[in-house]
Length: 186
Image (tube, rainbow, N blue to C red; front, side, top):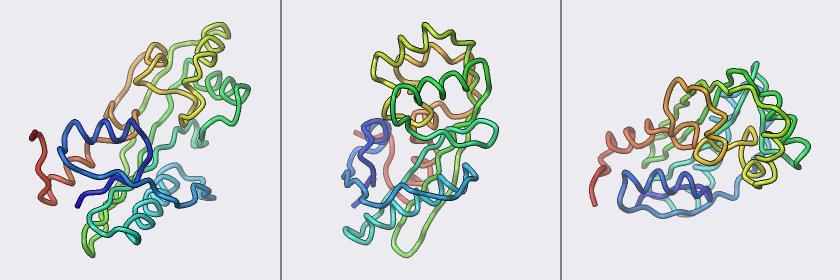
């Protein structure tokens, strides 16, 4: 049994594009983490998520956590519209990094990794930032934006895995293939 330890509809959708059958069991692990390094932070939370679900259901479990960082500072999910504005203003015209840590627990084996993608935003004026905030999209996303939604307009370029910016790098799917899971089948 393959289990995705996430409530994220985006992660579920990406995994479903490549793997035909899996279950979704959201993790109850705490998302509080004092690790300030973006890679370490994402890996710690991915391990916690996978471990918590694996302890309940066994099988092969995938945990993932995505963070947005600029100048090494992690931008979480905004608590309110003002915080979303501050994050988007900070990202305006700049390159930032999106890092997803993952943990796959398969039997006694724990496979971990992290994928980082660089993203460059266009210069954003206050009108476009507030228009985006009013859509409601930024409120449940790290860094206050989703590249797969309306904020795709803000992206000047990316360097790396697009799916990582959405929250589920394809490296995870490749690792599952290496573990014997069938990909690209229907």
